[in-house]
Image (cartoon, rainbow, N blue to C red; front, top):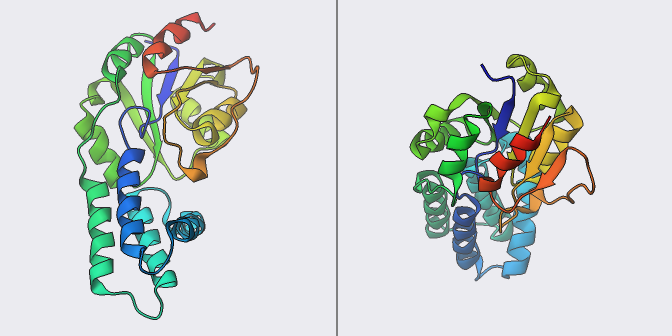
Length: 231
C-alpha cells in the first residue's frame, strides 16, 4: 500500500488536446471572415467563452456553444444554416478526435504507478473526459478518476481526504499553472508544472518562483525522478 498520492491532469498533460481546439478555432475564424476580422472574432469568442464557463463549464460542448453564440452576436440579425453547420461540425470533431498520448507519457505512468497511487484529476465534460481516458489505454494504472467542475485548493484537500493521504504526501502534475499548480500548492501539496506549447487564454498565469514544493519539468518523463527525491 502506497502512502503517496500522485495526481495527474489529463488534457495536454497525458494526451493532446489544445491542438484540436486550434483546428476548431481556425474553422470558426474562416467561416466568420465575411463578418469580422480574425482579431475581432477571437476577442469576442474569448469574452463569450469566459462568460459561459459559469453556465456550461469546461470542454468541447461548452466551446461549441460559445462559438455559436459568438457567431450570433457578430452576424446578427441572422446566422446562416451553412455557417452553423460548419461550427457544429468543428465541435463534433472536437468530441470525436483520436486520443494521442504525448511523448514519454506511457513510460512515465508505468514508473509513477510504482511510486504512489495515481489519480486522474481533470476538468471538462464528464462523458467526454471518461471516453478519452478509456481510449488512452492508461486506466489500469490509476486507482481513481476525479472529473471536477474546476480545480481549487479545497478540491485538492477533499481528494486527499478521500484517499486518506495528507496534502504533503500528494503530488499534482499538469500543464496549467492556474488550474494544476497554484491550487495544489495552496492545498499544501507538491506541484510539478509540465508546460505545453499551447496555453488556452483562460489558463494563463505566472508560475511561482522559488517555491519549496514546486518544480518545472520539460516533460512528464522527468516526473518519476523528481517524485523519488521528495520526503
